[in-house]
Amino acid sequence: MYKVRTYNAISIKGLERFPRQSFEVGSDISQPDAFLLRSQKLQGVAVPPSLLAAARAGAGTNNVPIAEYSKLGVVVFNTPGANANAVKELVMAGMLLATRGILPGMAYVNTLTDMTDASEMSAHLEKEKARFAGGEIKGKTLGIVGLGAIGSLVADMALAMGMKVVGFDPALSIDAAWRLSSEVSRMENLQALLARSDYISLHVPAMDATKHLINDAALALTKPGAVLLNFARETIVDSAAVKRSLEGSLGAGKLGKYVCDFPEPDLLNHSQVIAMPHIGASTEESEENCAVMAANQLMDYLENGNIVNSVNFPAVAMGRVAGTTRITFSNDNVSGVLGHVLSVLADKNVNVIDMMNKSRGELAFNIIDVESKPADDVISAIAAVAHVIRVRVI
Image (cartoon, rainbow, N blue to C red; front, top):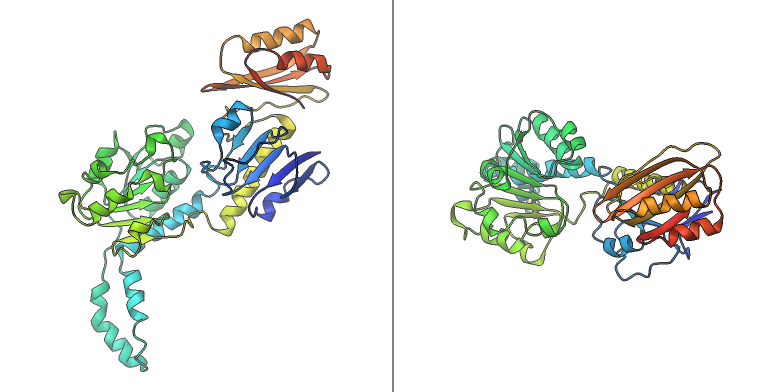
């Protein structure tokens, strides 16, 4: 029986994925095999010795101590793309709100409480509506920074709305490249994208390399009046620099509006800021998709040792042959470890049926199917091999 401890409110559709006969799932489970969470911060939370994996029902994993978990051989999963449509739709809403006088117009209408005659109100608004005239996004250029699951959907949406789309992503994967429309013009660098874009939408992960990616220097290159949209992470944008740009202190690079999902105190009630309360992935459908994906990934890892969508270990998956036993082990990515483990199996007369070895950065992961269940001393010998982090028998 595998045990999964949940944090936060996980969609029932995700929880229902776990078969009751082989999984115990709940928020008060001790010695769990896995964590399933949304926004719970795990930094400082004691790591039970039993913990094998943690799955974040969402894309971002900055609430998980990945470096600590990696040293312990704990596989960390996320759910890239599961909330992509929800974010995509909010990006469109953000562009429209920034372009048309929707919000100030609605606010003005709600001040007309002293008017009791509908015809009088209608005539009055006919005179006043020019104050809230805006523009259209058709024909404008959208620059997308980050062309992964969300960025590619945003690109398709913008193209369907008649926009021109340019993109920049130095780490574009082969899968993402296949998803991307041929109508998206690839920019060689961020600077080129900023100079061409009427709208700039950010879709990169939060990491050291992207901290304050949008700063004074970047904003100085933007087209006058450009709209910046941040539905990725707050640390990607230097809010102080945004405020300086909005207020014109950067001269020709003056930003027109900033639309974000991450309100900050110094930007509240700013006339050129549209701040939303971190609702990018807050749809019923998105939460269900994330929970189901996270649950599926945990089950496949716990039951088969397969890894899909991990942020710290390599992707590795191998079909199983009936009647065999599976050994998995993680190790530091140095030469000779797998050879030593195979020598242990040979010395103990354990017949290997199939195997797979993958590495990622400083870590490696191995799946070895053997003819029969190995004795405890075999597993102990594997665990004792230098640089082996963790061994499992499934």
